[in-house]
Amino acid sequence: MSRQDQQKSKPTPFPHGAFLPNGLNTDPPLSANDPTVGYKLNHFMMRIRDPEKSMKFYIELMGMRTVFTMNVGPFTIYYLGYPQTPEHRGDLAKFGGDTAMNLQHTLGLLELYHVHGSETQAPDYYSTGNTPPNLGFGHLGFTVPNVPEALARLKANGVQVVKDLGVCDRASIPISDWENERGVGVEVKGTESEIHPEYAKVFNKIAFVRDPDGYIVELVPQNVDPLDP
Image (cartoon, rainbow, N blue to C red; front, side):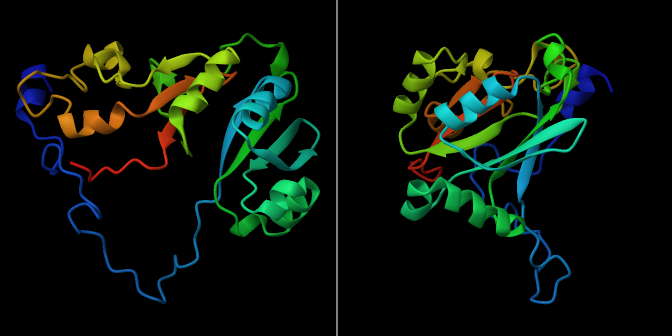
């Protein structure tokens, strides 16, 4: 398809700038006896090169705690999560034990996967999903009570900032020049391809940083309201 044809095509059925809970209401009904009732998005796994650096970032800087670890031979896995109660925050051994026993029903877990020997490889040994042409995975999203404070703390600890607060320009949007050169995600001012100001208001309040392996971590304020005019 030529670039001209791409510009003429309509890649989405959704109106420009509209925040649509439930989309266009085209999802099929979910009955009580649907075979997927009970499914949960339980965890996300990422390969890491240096467990010491990764654990420092996700535990000391992002506040997660260890649910369990296991050396299975060729690799070690680290499961992390957030203690949700004062009891668990005050007794991390109980948090780990209780969560491990209820692992399959716990939401928001992060599995760090260290293949033994990868620590000797170059820093860019693993693709993060954001470097052309190996695009795919975008980011991990964390909601935090206070983004400015969280971001300042990460900066003070040497964490690389990808997108600062109060910024919503072409350079800060996760669309690469590599994609634009292929006619993908091209923004044309004054058209429906332009970043909508309602989205920009929310995006200004969000920050992105890099973890030790270069994966992008998003910081979202817990009080952000996408419907706020």
